[in-house]
Image 1 (cartoon, rainbow, N blue to C red):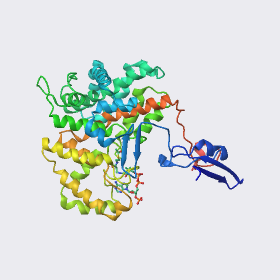
Image 2: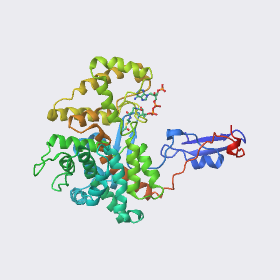
Image 3: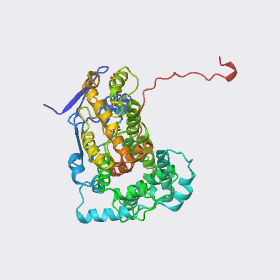
Image 4: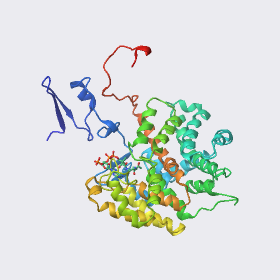
Length: 423
Ligand code: ACO
């Protein structure tokens, strides 16, 4: 059986045979037969935008792998910094490499004092931390003008390290600002997740001792969120990066894409939804209203996973570990009931809608004491390593500037009508 497709233009009778390579067919080959005919694919549902060796997702089988390693094994055995190294370099680090990378990240956790005093202090007291984060990441480009030199490998590496290292600092700064609490400097004697918790939580104690169960839970959640191939924010990163913008500007754009409730804002939407449902007794009525078209069941459904989201399983288990430390969230029972009702309902079964990673993360974050507004920020911190790995890969592949086509459906040419003559 030939691994190819044959396309025939019925207007001319001309045909072209196109090989299927890595599960795709090259649009450039179609264009040879059909110049000026565009593929109509809103939301890129059937379009592979790039070749990538970073993350593998099989939505039908519920498989997620980073550089070939199953997400379940990484979540069980590795740390977020190990995973960030893996995403960026293609291989797991040996002990020396991990120690070197950890040292590099740790040395770049501080932010310029003007960033804190002048820039962050300028926000209104009730500014959303994600709005602060997006702006702060973009503002970093003004502190590191050499970041514009994206062709210099050493400069590129330095910006990658800075971004991964400073995201928790900026995130915690945004959080503390919204509480009216003083900024906590990074503590470079702590691990990545412990330092983040310290910057978020330390009040007057000289050294913040994080509960190891919570520090581990943060690390696992960071691993699960580190990359997910060509989703909305990663595509934004690649698209902005394709214009050769500096990585801070591109990461700020990716953060903005992540902010929406259909993407990284979904865990915030899940928590609001569970709070509104309020009791197990209201679950059936809520599901009925969703089926009647009144809103969405947030935390359900995924463009790619049509069987189950492997991350959701890990997060559900993690919730129990966290609740051992924090006490159980009253919303967990509502979530479990909602999952049970939806998974046995024809509407959700026929549309292949399953819990996604965000269905349980909001409950965990809330139990850990993070305000709802911080949820997308908690997603952006680890996704930064995935965005940067994808950005670096697209530069290595010498990706052309992204420039899709459109099918024009507007007015045909018509003469200008002077203002006085218009109806
Ligand atoms: N609740 C109710 N119905 C849904 C849901 C949902 N959560 N998701 C999809 N549907 C329905 C749609 O209305 C549609 O029904 P129809 O065929 O009768 O018109 C059908 O299922 C197919 O849905 P699409 O919108 O075409 O699916 P798409 O792949 O475009 O969207 C998305 C995927 C955005 C994730 C969607 O399922 C959704 O909005 N879910 C809720 C938000 C959410 O949880 N987002 C987090 C995604 S994971 C992440 O970003 C980390």
